[in-house]
Image 1: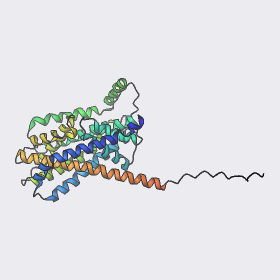
Image 2 (image 1 turned 90 degrees about the horizontal axis):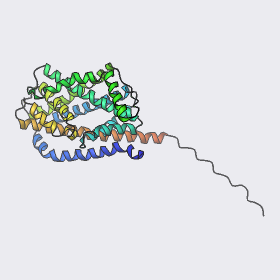
Image 3 (image 1 turned 120 degrees about the vertical axis):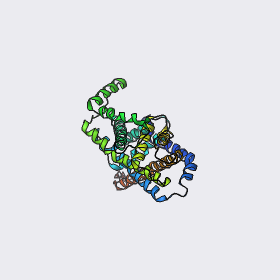
Image 4 (image 1 turned 30 degrees about the horizontal axis):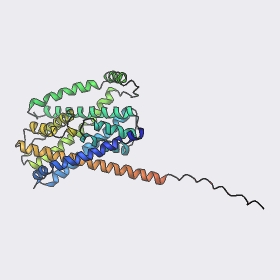
Length: 322
């Protein structure tokens, strides 16, 4: 059983790749029609900006691990992150957490720290998203459709939930329910808020990548603040609707409803679909590169390790005389 559990993260990653491939096949005709004749330059730039955003979030998880008392190399953490997070595309809502948590545990991280760091990472990541949405609103009236504004209420609630007293209370309840000790270092409030701020540039880059897609498909070059608001809110709602794997469908619907600055709902839908494919490619490429780097490092380490000295052969004594 223990041996099987070691490979749970990898199994989830394989399933994630399968569901990602299915999503690409389903959406590809619409995406191809949307980008027909479009300038590829901004789309390539969007892919680069999206890659940087996801990499920053992965590094943020490494900082969460350190905040809970475990230090890991960038190479190890990014391997666990990219491979484990493919689980978000598996229906069920919890598989990205299980995927990352089990990949970290397979790498030697205590289970309580691995899963706790994933939970902390998700909380600070999406609180940072809500903060960026609030900034977009405050700096120019972006996002005129008010039905999603209540999402912003989660920001003060989430910041309060990061307070050590609240976290300690939650851990006490978890220990009673699970009937086991959970050895987790509760970070100071200032450390948690610092982790939140770390993720703000990532969301600016995610919004920027989506704006590049919008500017490519819509000649009117919509207000970047409005696109930023629509993008971030759609990601947050897609995350909250756990039944939708990877927020597929939900994120696009919210973006279309919120991106009222685009010429039509058809254009907004095309932007959402193309942006979705770009971020799927980022996940797949990141997982492939991180796995390749991890394997090459393992092979190099194996070659550099000295071979164990062979036991000296037992020499035969002289044959007995007859």
